Image (cartoon, rainbow, N blue to C red; front, side, top):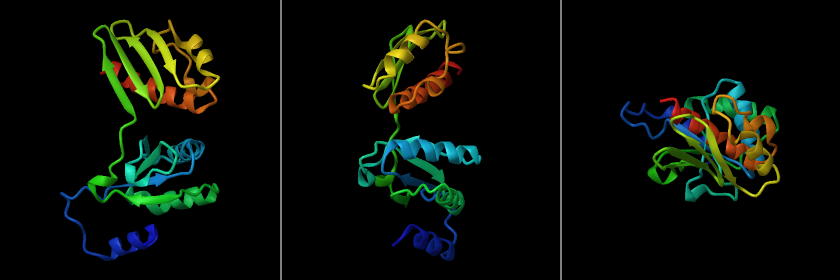
Length: 186
């Protein structure tokens, strides 16, 4: 059954109990990470609460990221993507535990320092001073440049990887950076 067919059947069926949250989210699966990045930017610009995560094994397509989205916005999202000539390979409702997306972040606390990894990119900062002490990982040509720009600077004063990087590694570093800022701001 197609996603739109599933959505139509769901709408015609009786309302799910409020305690059943399995149908609240869906996954957009794309062919490559460039499409994921483009779709995320486009949907966030429209004010839609989307999040990039790792794909569950049952929907892996070669791209190591999927976009989760609120099911209530499904038709709106598909129209936006169609207008932008951006077609997901699959649009999947998260309706069972095997379809749960995987978190992209791995966090390691070293006492004085905290390391956040997103995909293959890592950023390490001093928790007390919020100063970046290391940027590593990936294999993209802009990683040394991004590291040189960021290491030694405060989380508040460093250039954003998304503004200076142009590769998947720069995108992953932006995600790790945002997670580091979120954790250090608590």
